Length: 208
Image 1 (cartoon, rainbow, N blue to C red):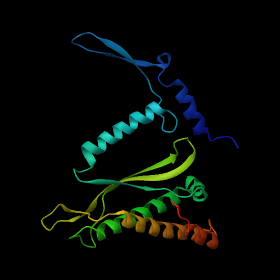
Image 2: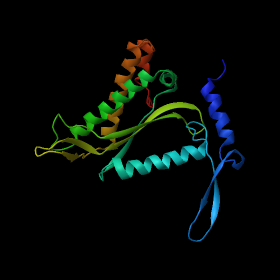
Image 3: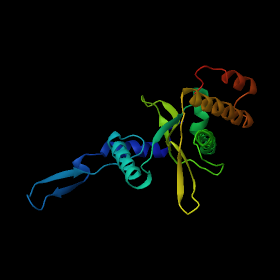
Image 4: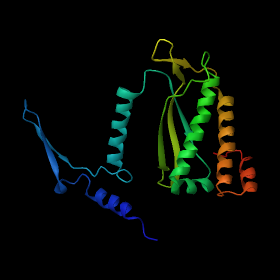
């Protein structure tokens, strides 16, 4: 089947990206008179490395300056075996279910390892969905920037942060095992994976 029209549009815009003949802005210093030309960019989201890098830097600066508090952070990544990735690629609802399941498991872990926290405590996180691997292979996975602890309402207003402790390799492995077990059940319930296959995948040493 042919590629969707939006994919073709993305590639055609990328071919014009950064070429002065397709438009530019002139930047000039009012004091010294130095000027230079800035080519228009495609502002694409899937193909252009220059535009993607600029958007990445701008997003990181926004999160650092305006969103994330000055607290410890940890990156949590959810990747799944190839057999499951293709279902995630095509089903946005399944993506949301997988991400919600993953963050709920991380939250439960952080709450259990944050002294002084209550059942009402919640995590703080920013999640990004990556659709490709380093070689542009189809590889949908989730990168989550998570505060290393939990927040809960303070009696006097606002929120209080409880820092997590004791997050060692065994703790991370238990979260991985729990997410794997629950996610495989989701695929079975949706008829995307046979129960016997799910039981076999649950025993894989490197199951995602």
